[in-house]
Picture 1: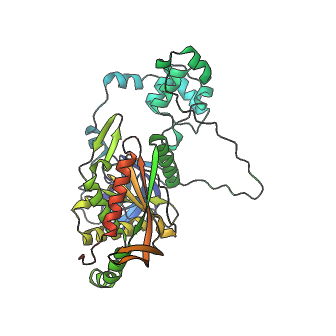
Picture 2: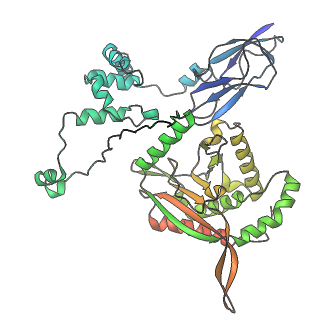
Length: 444
């Protein structure tokens, strides 16, 4: 008999830890090689961890809701084969991963190692308040009380107070808020400061008899934080266009049966939409950017995020990497694979990283159009609505005629910091043109 330590494997760039959601086996249970034994969750995605060896689970080291670091043992298995390695070959230990991270300045380390007894006392009075070591250090140096901490609105994950939040509080501590008229009267016109947005105080929610209180799950909290953060970060503008997709509908109807017979999977409209988006991005590459302060980062790769609804009502956005390098058939396979794995919790964190532009299909729910929120740090997102038959005026060489056409609305939301109406509108028009002029002889 041999002892095997099951380590938490690497799950992609930037992912350093995961939370144990559920163990599928108990201590004493036998497991087979490549069998999923535990469900884990990161900030990106939920996934399963398989065991690379067969054996019996003799000890579970990380219980449900506990956090494990990459490369850290989460269980001990007893195996019959002594030849099995004690670690998964591709997994790095947490210490090895740490060595790859740039180390902070020694002055910062000494600051973080200062006693924080006063802060600990104040934070213990409010067990729901989490402060990082750096924030705790600032709290101690500035003698910020627990009562003052409660007044600071955190913008970090789950409402946590960030370094920027605490420094803003320190800079504005003790200052009186002046009325706009008083400020203008005391300040020369050329020196009038830019007004800062003030978050309104949260209004109390009245609860009536029979009302049900539902606690948000972890994924819903992440989505909520991301949506609020995006609205605070980017001034959203949305343009709309109605697209004649008659050619697209006809082409798909002609090819879907033969494609399914040949490939064993469905041919949806999504590969066509993604192809049109990729071509429009190639025409207008400044849509494929991110914003870093006063810098614009123009992305080389075209990675298309695909918003996918999950059975539990939550949303996830798997990413089609290098979509510009895939054929139409390649796009169809990638989209079907990502959608299947998303709905069956088989995605890895890498599958949800690196998107440079996103599409969401609100037509799936019978909606004609929507105003989607931009996933940060992207600067644009396209929503496609339901395809419906409509009478339309068609211009022909013999004059105008009325015909039944397949129509669809598209909504393009973009970040007005870097995408003006002309760029956002022209990009949308090019997506429209590629769809309306779809070649009925396109091969797949």
